[in-house]
Length: 252
Image (cartoon, rainbow, N blue to C red; front, side, top):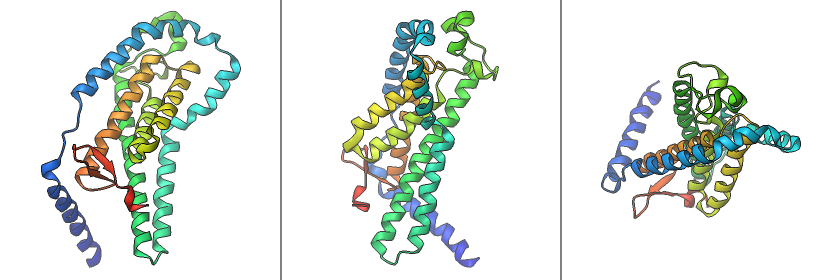
C-alpha cells in the first residue's frame, strides 16, 4: 500500500513538471477558424447535396449498399475502443516480460499512443451523441414525410438522431489521430476517413451534411487532444510553431 500511495503523488508530480517545462511554448487549442470552416462545409453539403441524395439514395445499386454496410461498421465505437484496449493490455503484458529498458520504453510509448487515439474517439463520441439527441434531425428514411428539415429536438428516437453522424465522428477522430501520429501517411488516412464517412450516406442512414459535421467534429477532438498531450510531453512534443509533433523516435 505504501508503494502505491507513493506512486500516485509521484505520477502527478511528474505530469506537473512536464507541463511547467513546456508552459512557454504552449499553443492554444484552435477553434474559431476550424468552427468557421466547418460551418461553411456543412452548409454547402446541406444546401447542395442533402436534398438530391435524399431523393436518390434508395436507387443506389444493391451490391454497393451491401458492401458499404459491412465496411461502415469500422466506425463503431465498440470496435475502436476494443482495439485500443487490446493494444493497451498487450503492451502492458509484453513490457512486463521484457528486461531491456529501451524495449520497455517502446511498449510504454505504444500504450500512450493507444490511449491517445482511444480518448480522442471517446470524447468525440460523448459530444456527438449529446448533439444528436439535442438536435433531433430526421434520418433519410423519413425523407418523404420530413424532408431535409425535419427536426424533433430531445426526442431520442433513432430515426431522429441523424445530425451529426456518430460513426463519422468516430472515424474522423481515429484517422486524424493516426494522421498526427504518422504524418507521412496522412493523405492515406484522410482518404480512408472520407470513404468510410461516405458509407453512411450510401446505406441511407445519414445525409452528407451529417457526415461532414461528424468527420469535422471527430478530427477537431483528435487535434485538440494531441495539443493537450503535447503539453505534458506524452506521445507528442511541441514543435517550433507550437503544433504537436509525434515522438516517433521513441519507437524507431
